[in-house]
Length: 175
Image (cartoon, rainbow, N blue to C red; front, top):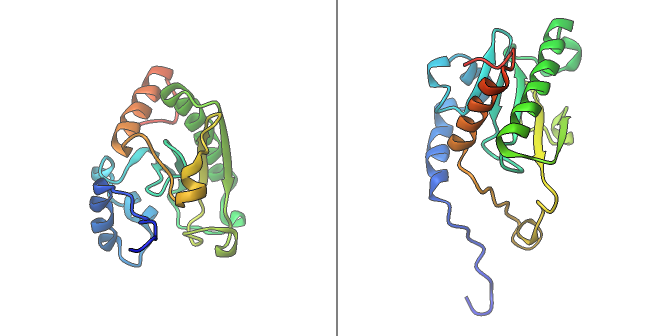
């Protein structure tokens, strides 16, 4: 490598996720998680209701990045019922409260990516991103290394969020 910079980041903990991608295949990972409640810990499902899921993003922008999704496989906002919307928004509120308590974030980016051209990695299944933010959480790594540094394992964040939901008595945050 004469004069070239090696662009590798050692992350052996990612192998388990990469190896598990084939289990879902071409299907929807959110529907896969919905149909396997006994695998919530392995699938990073934080909590679920009869019509929604809250899941830790496996490709997070920051530590604690959550996805809030209906259990129904719907990709268009207009396909959701008023009750489904109300539950999603209530879960976003619960997610914000739990994240503030668990990881002490200072702000949030909350949003939907609708359509692949808008950045939706799974355009067929609507989901809301809840991204915790901290002052100074963007550093040189994304700029120069084109990588993000996530300081905590997904399993540890999940446990902290479950504890926070219990301590706060969040009404929709059940196991």
